[in-house]
Amino acid sequence: MELWPAIDIRGGRCVRLRQGDYEQETVFGDDPAQMARHWVAQGARRLHLVDLDGARSGRMTNSAAVEAILQAVDVPCQLGGGVRSQQVIEHWLSLGVARLVVGTQALKDPPWFQQMARQFPGRLVLGLDARDGRVATGGWLETSEVDALELARRYESLPLAALVYTDIARDGMMQGPNFQGVQRMVQGVRLPVVASGGVSSAEDIRRLAQLGAAGCIVGRALYEGAVRLPEALAAAGEPPPAGG
Image (tube, rainbow, N blue to C red; front, side, top):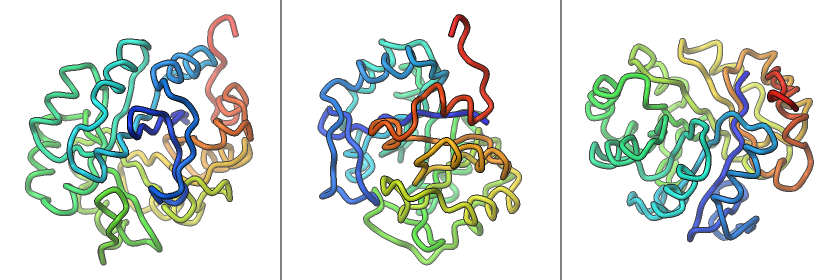
């Protein structure tokens, strides 16, 4: 299973939110690029980046910080937050982002998302952020009536790189993932499922791998030292870095 250390950016700084609440923010560093170098030095083979301001506004708000990360490390970076137009997709891909996570616009404009997925095969990821099984959008500020699995099935035939499934109630809470929700998604769609939200231990990571998740995003647990990255990589089944 692929492990994705998360770097969430707000106001140019590296932060984490609790349950997607912008009023419950913890700042973990003023230099996201330095944080990226730190995780890569610890053995990270890839990074999950989130433009939290962009997720809420729909605009590329933290471009400078993301560009600095792309210049600082030589590992694939996946980016989400505010990816809602072809122009934004082309902008980030031209700068070297490996994959882009699309959430809000996939729900609000299905024909557009289908067109983009076919135009950029293997470069887009469907981002499903769910609260009580229902899809949330707009930086998690709005909850729809759409069932997350139902939405995933609409798009599973597209040439997508993966599906990131986040349980908002668990995100940043250090209470463990929603294993039942992840299992439902893994068994319900053909897309590779990347689990996100609530990972707080190496055992959580091992269990997600056993459920068949293709990947796992880890944020607060790494920043607060609940699990060390080498330990997390081992739990995911990733071999240690050369010379490590």
